[in-house]
Image 1 (tube, protein in one colour):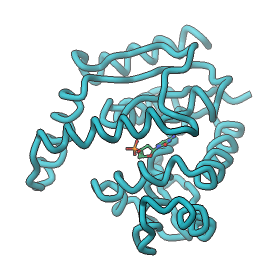
Image 2 (image 1 turned 180 degrees about the vertical axis):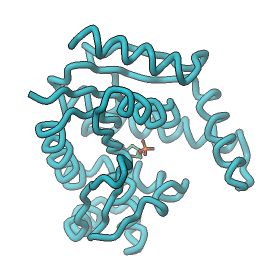
Image 3 (image 1 turned 90 degrees about the vertical axis):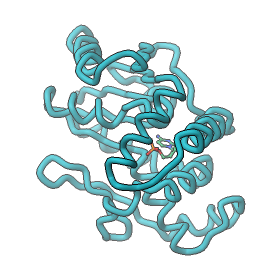
Amino acid sequence: MSYNVAIDGPAGAGKSTIAKKIAKKMNYIYVDTGAMYRAMALFLLRNHVDPSDSTAISEKCREADITLCYEQGEQVVLLNGENVNGLIRTEEVGNMASYASPNPNVRKKMVELQRQLAKTSDVIMDGRDIGTCVLPDADVKVYLTASSAVRAKRRYDELTAKGETCDLSVIEADIIERDHRDMTRELSPLKQAEDAVLVDSSDMTIDEVVDTIIALCKDRR
Ligand code: DC
């Protein structure tokens, strides 16, 4: 039987950084489900779909085939066969993903693929609904969060390191708005699963968070 670790939490909590490190140390496959929703968002943006038009999203998403493959241990997201890893980490795509991800047709497609991966491999999967919906029987569930101010600062540092100019208060407002959308949507809203362990990374280093979660994985094994 495969071993499954679910990490959920809001944007900017450090889920992907942490999950990637744990995957390496524990020899799990890292599945970044946000990247799948982002690839779908990129497809919708390219096709000029209006984010507020859920009928158009439901229709158009049928034409997007999203799959994952792994190159030298790195997850590669393929959108209709094209590697889109380098195109999905923008605020525009992230915002569109937040509008498209509540759509039932979009979620159905993604969840099927995610469950398939978890069935066949030991995975650490991060997202918003992994512990509550995608993998309700995961061996370890973590709800990883941090204050919106800390998350905004991390995002700000990431963007400025890439040479992008940005405004910290705009980023924080954006994060708060996105959290609200993710937490209040009807289908699979972001929330802590009853059996998930809460980890608040606001005052923790990356290594402290990694060690905390690895201890949980070893405990439950
Ligand atoms: O984690 P991220 O910022 O890459 O996610 C992008 C968007 O996708 C975010 O608004 C929430 C959504 N998402 C989701 O609804 N369910 C998931 N399992 C993962 C992400």
